Image 1 (tube, one colour):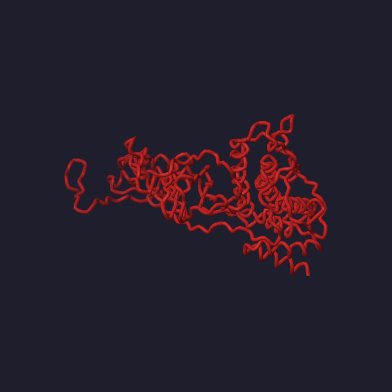
Image 2 (cartoon, rainbow, N blue to C red; image 1 turned 90 degrees about the vertical axis):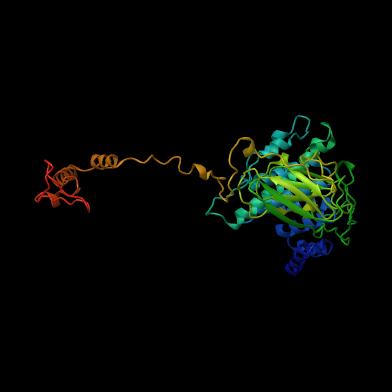
Amino acid sequence: MEFVNANKGIALCKEGNYADAIPHLTKAIAVTMSPIWLLARAEAYTKASQFERAIVDAEHAYNIAAARQHSQRLEQMLEAQYRRGVALFRLGRYADADACLLWAVRLGSGASAREEDLVLAKVDGDGFYNCTLEQAENEKPVSPEKGNVNQADLTKSRKWVRAHSMRQVCLSNLARLASDATERKLTVTRTPSPPALVDGEYSLDGSKDGSEKAAGGRQGPAALDTTATAVKPQQLRFDFFQSSANVTLSIFCKGVDKKTFRAEADSRTIVLHNMPNEGDPPVMLSLAHEIEPHTIKQFVGSVKVELTLVKAQPGEKWKTWGSMTDSSDLASVSQPKESVLSEPDVEDEPPKPKPIPDWVLQNKPPPYPTSSKSGPKDWEKLGDDDEEPQDVNHFFEKLYKGATPEAKRAMMKSYTESNGTELSMDWSDVANRQVEVHPPEGVDVKNWDGTKRK
């Protein structure tokens, strides 16, 4: 029966009906504590703003997965740390959140679950967590080798990008806090010790009333019970076109406020803040390729937002712009960091003139469009490395120099006896015969004294 409830709960989660999914998953977990079911309910609890319960489920899922020898063991441990990080972030515990996300990133990078804990090196003597956005950007993603790509590698790579992007936002919020803020205190450990579940559920303060309290007495966002209706993220439509140097991404959405709209970006991620409808979470976009984040331009219109992205690799052809990640994980982001995008354009103002491309200033031809991963090629220089054409004598000198002794004798005999009209390298063919003269058509053969040969 627990499998029926679990499958029903997971199906409801996929449909976005998290409130109805929680009771089904709870009945299943009361019988069997499966990491998959716990992680599904942790996500549902997060959507329903029951963050303490989401953390407990994720911690139980991590410990159970770590104790098993299973093909999906590391993937489940990664997902559990990510779910911990998201729930802690929503509670405003940014240091704890980034630590969990860093553990998820390390697992996604292929590191061992038993490697030295890198988080401990980022904590000072007073217990404050010190990590910067610049340090996080040095983490490298999983890059499966071509020809040896499997679904597990692709899934791990996608989850690495998701956790890494979440760290960008988390560390941006952490950087705005005072150096002695309580949110900077690290209170979590890589291997958690969660409280026990009673009848498959974590009881808050000895009850099941669904109230949420953060550590240190801080109140999290408004708590919802299991019958509440989860807020669904706004549905957006995307389109893009590209040139050899730029990609123009259109986000179709009505009613975007030009004055309050904000966007922040790094080389592979864009986060859009203050989209329409109060309470909607920011929109996170994971790009398919790298861009130059400090040169992005934006245009806010009545029905769409248009972003002009400069390719980090000019001439590279994008098959797709990327995808939108789970934006509700970023809800409650406050005071976004200063955007690296330019100031929004006013819809009625004429567009600003485009900057002069570098190839014009440097008096060079424009780059050729190409789909090559190595970048554009200058076809004007295609023949620059070719050898200069040589005369026919140079060819024969090279041929004679590389020949065998017998071939050299055959060449000398045939060339001399035929008055330069035949050249043979086969000594067995010319050794016992007189090589005849074979002049070209229209040419007469003459003796050395100038008389015509009979």
